[in-house]
Image 1: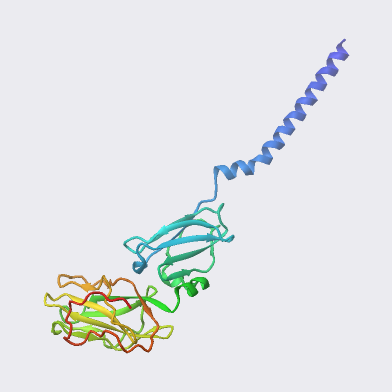
Image 2: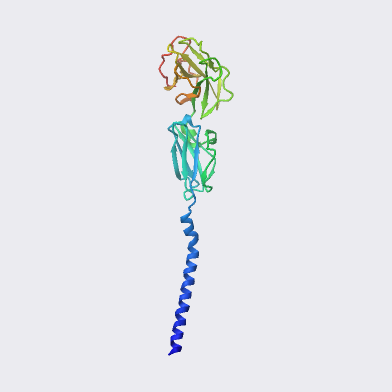
Length: 274
């Protein structure tokens, strides 16, 4: 009888050891999974500044499978932010979508989490999407920019052209309007090489209330006065102000165009479509 009881106890002990060993193996196998759940990879924060020319436009993130995994709208300060989970993408391409087309970045790594010390700027969106080039056609999107010059005589205005968010460099030689500028007369800058074969001039006129309005002159087309085109006489800071976006077409041979000449129309002209 004692021998039978001893053998039963031995079998129960062996079964318990085997069960414990199996449970231990299971916990070991699940440990990496549990650790991954407790400590998931943090999202990678992509962000940027200096997109003041694209306020209201959208920046989207597309992963390696061409699936959109995030988006952001450019705010009034020209900034945007997108958080991408490493579970959603290994790499992404960021695309800036505007009325004038789509520009995108190189491939960007997502696996390394955190927040970049230095955000992306318009210069990082350096590739145009080929399909959009065909859709947009032969136009170029630009903005006129102007400011009170920080060191010249009081209320001297400096102006330039901003193409795809980048200011023309070097700026046009004739780009200053002094405080003694005649009223109700249109003046124009020297030629500006806007790239892609476009050569334009900025035109400007001071109104009786000392506000200055700006427009664009493109050979073969009417002078273009954008809806947002004014530097008010009450402006006191020297930050760059920008006009509405202007889509300028390629030049043609049309001679029957509207030109805002010196004093013949004054500064009351309405915006003109190209």
